[in-house]
Amino acid sequence: MEYRIQLLEQRGYEITTDSSAQDVEELLDDFIEMWNNSSDMDVMTEKELALQKAAMAAEQSGDLEDAYDIWRTISSIDTNRPDYLCILGRVAQKLGRWAYAEQAFLDAIKVASKLKAILVS
Image (cartoon, rainbow, N blue to C red; front, side, top):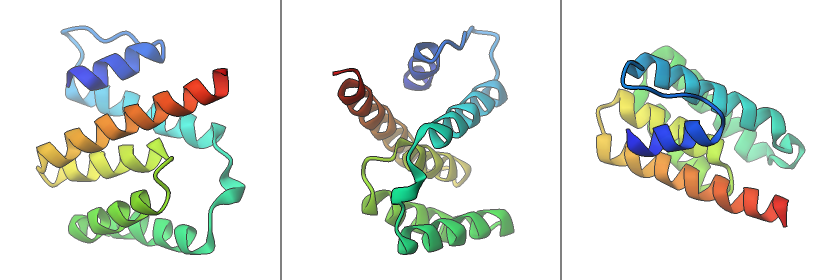
């Protein structure tokens, strides 16, 4: 939880001990949306787009195992997309795969930090 709090605080969100897991989840959703709006979506391959649609459909239909496998594949195709890693982490969290969820969130933070450093340079 600490890594999520640090990420959100870096983005200007205030997290307190009164913040619920739902509050943190909503803030992560905001982060994913913000990242998607700032990313260059034109470079997405057709395969990546098809997989993304399949993953979202699987998640919406409740097939979290399939959604997790597809998001894992997508995040390995484009390793510079912290939004993919956040979504992967969220699906892993829903499945109760806490270690995988934590790793995905940590990887997202690392990727976002590297991209931020490149943009600032």
